[in-house]
Length: 410
Image (cartoon, rainbow, N blue to C red; front, side, top):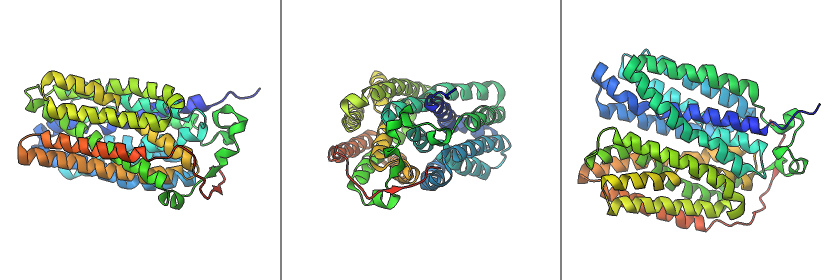
């Protein structure tokens, strides 16, 4: 009896993996207050661990990409998820601030680089070509659902059991649930089990060709997609890290920022599903431009109409244009350059994304410090998004024939 197509199972595991990976990596801020209370560590010092995490994650993206291209996504994702889980278990033992920097700032970030969006996008792209955008969107919804589930769970655990138990429970969730799922249910390629991308034999020929990283770096298409993506990184993490502080500046409670980010995550999940459904009809480029414009409008809204109720509208509009950008850029790069070197190519693109993300977090805080307001930072974010939108408009829709190389699939 012929085995049913395993692509849907792979997408489900990618969804669950992204839930755990993004959920854990974004919990750090909730540990700041209990760590400050327990050890007296300054919040500025603890915030540096987040910056270290972002830079380490970015630097290791190309490395993880090369490992995926060589050994396949399954082994890299499973070992990286395990490293994140172990890092959280180790965090339960911390007594010195340097340990938090090592366990969260370095080890968690290295693990996240190998099991986050880039790694799972490569995995899903190996299983789908015709439905790539739709399936990338479905798996990427795990990023939003992870925030909606694991961030409140973290707060509950810290409040009721303490930060050490919270670290242990979160680490065990990853080790006991996610790692076994990846090891038992994921295959690197459909060819490994005698199947074809999309379950369609007609997809098999084109799926064996891919561009090399060196070819992608000489392609204007890669740089257009990646520089537009960098504007996403700059504004995405600026909002994630500074929106709670801005809400307090406007007279909101300390919990308002978390509520707003939750609203944004829910709007992002809905938008993620919609963009996946609409990508074939309207095209990835057109949807990507539309999302950049929507996020640009959200930043302008904050700059000209600051107020508590305006923040709720911002969260909805911004959330609509936040995470859905990721699978669209991934799909565009995968469609153009193929799957066999996709880890290396996407890893380099993500490195640019994270460098700009760290820059956005730093400049947002710096401008707030010297001016006493986030207004200039919002206009700066709007200007960068406008530039990213214009750059993306120059992306050609037609396929560009690159020198290709047939590479044996992992």
